[in-house]
Image 1: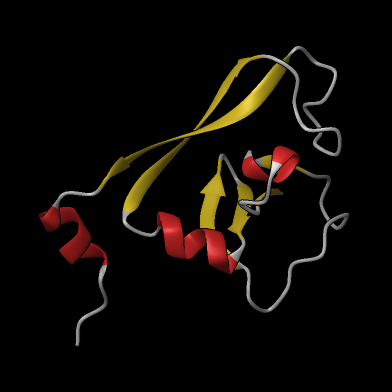
Image 2 (image 1 turned 90 degrees about the vertical axis):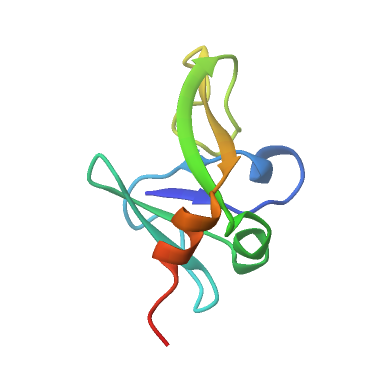
Length: 95
């Protein structure tokens, strides 16, 4: 599973954990799947990013020390762009 907390250091990047080795809280937000792998974000971080499209990429560098990518010479990176007004309206549930 992937999780992004928005904390400093390791928590500011998406981290990948083996299934069942990271506890999700009731306040964490499920964003969807990345190639079949669930992606969650801390609720406070989600409030900051909810108006953006998130793109999870793999780049050169060392990953977080608790993430499965650590020591591989590659790491996960979140890129983003703001949704257009039309895209944002399409995401909101009907009133």
